[in-house]
Image (cartoon, rainbow, N blue to C red; front, side):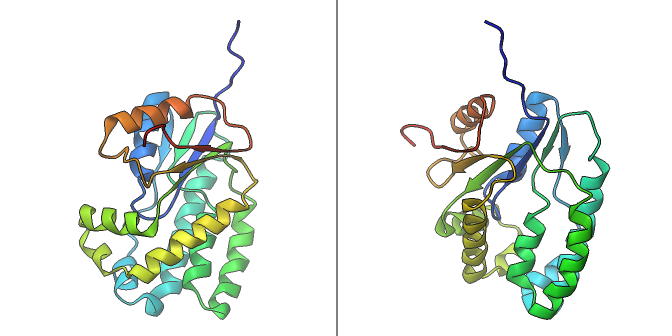
Amino acid sequence: MANLFSPPRFIAIEGPLRVGKSTLARVLAETIGARRIAEPENNPFLDRFYAAQSSVSFETQMWFLMERYEQMRAVKDSADPIVADYTFEKDKLFAYVNLTDAELSLYNRYYQMFRSEVPTPDLVIYLEASPDVLKQRLKRKGVAEEQAISDEYIEQIAQSYEHYFFHYTASDLLVVDTSEIDFVEKNEDLQLLLKRISEPVKGKQYFLPLGA
């Protein structure tokens, strides 16, 4: 029988800090021969944001919004398969955590203009983990500026992601609980996840390897 499954053209991988988005995006892009869109780097405000969140929150957020918009707009009409390690909507998720009401009002004027010009993924892979697991992985990674991130902020972001994807309907969605698996460190976990991604996902589905 012919294989009628057509792999999604645009896959986005999401989840909070240190959940494994970049690793999975890189490996998946290499596996399926896709173009990878990586999270913007070298935000000149980010170090100061981690050290004292409120003082440069708006500048930090607007820099990310502009960079993500330009990246996503550039691939809107691409015929090549794409794997991104973020969704455009994640920018607004962080904005609601980090900005004041007045800042958010101004931010939203730009966000609404930009959102209509960027593509929506065919499949989103949401990597979730408990705040305690995220804290452990952040410490293990040892990025100097990230050590200033408070436990409260990690918990806020994790809760925001959980709430957002509980209601998410814009794309097919595969939810992967990574609290008991570690595909960054364990190849067997990675291979099981890649196998699941190679199979159809319709609506919202969940994945946790047996025995994890």
